[in-house]
Image 1 (tube, helix red, strand yellow):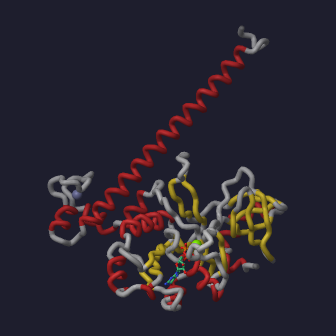
Image 2 (cartoon, helix red, strand yellow):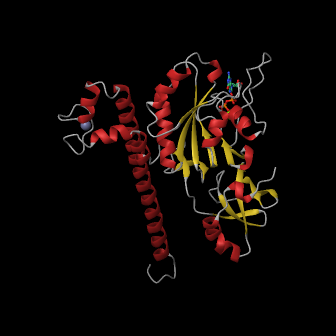
Image 3 (cartoon, protein in one colour):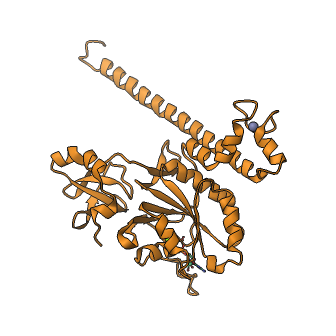
Length: 343
Ligand SMILES: Nc1nc2c(ncn2[C@@H]2O[C@H](COP(=O)(O)OP(=O)(O)O)[C@@H](O)[C@H]2O)c(=O)[nH]1
Ligand SMILES: [Mg+2]
Ligand SMILES: [Zn+2]
């Protein structure tokens, strides 16, 4: 597969950002796939495999190549980040330099609104524009009802109903997608099927588990592919089971802009909307203007975010302490070394 730099989103700000590397004789490229310690980089004229030891490289990054290794990662414009499962004091970057985050929600069973809210907070926090994609509408008896329900939690976000099987809604969706698009959502919601419809590239789609007990095909890597019609590129992601928020205060505020607006009228500036007097948010619930479920969801995400922040602070503090200790030890050893003049 080959990508044009225009389709990949190369523009004059990227060229400026790359200029010092160009002066050093390095080559620009965009990471289209990451494996253990190696990545595929789209360069002018094709895709090359490169090493990237000791660098934090993610699908979507623009990099400077020196031969067959990544020498530097250009500063990211946007990044989709979740709290890393390992508990280190950093987030895990799921995709870099994304313009549109498509939150994928299937029209089947009861819609998990809390999950939609969480993914929207993550999407807003990335700095990219969120859009909600409803999938599998062919299997849904009342798409309008689902759309209304989801629209109620997707403030300021377009909701597009699609069926990859029936081929409906795909033109409307395509019109929404420009630049670098990433699909996020739980495993099985139809991301890879949709990605195949939007790119024309056959992707691993989950099959029904075969009778012989063979494993299902699932997406295991984040992979960047050109969208049909040369309008941009798409990143398909493996299903996200856990999507912890990491440093996502602004994202939560954007995702809950309705509550944020109400909160401006609470009597106390630091109102937690948990029964304080003069709480405009509680009043809105009592008046039937805001679902209590949505406030619960908001408070849960705020608490989670605060907890993650506190944990990060604690970890950073202990990392700093460990560094200080080792520094003191080093000093001590230096002083105690024979010939240091102080024995
Ligand atoms: N009825 C219906 N099923 C779909 C549609 N899109 C995907 N599926 C099915 O949903 C399952 C999961 O799809 P997949 O694309 O692998 O989901 P992913 O895990 O999010 O990448 C597969 O069995 C698909 O055939 C659709 O538009 N309609
Ligand atoms: Mg998949
Ligand atoms: Zn309040």
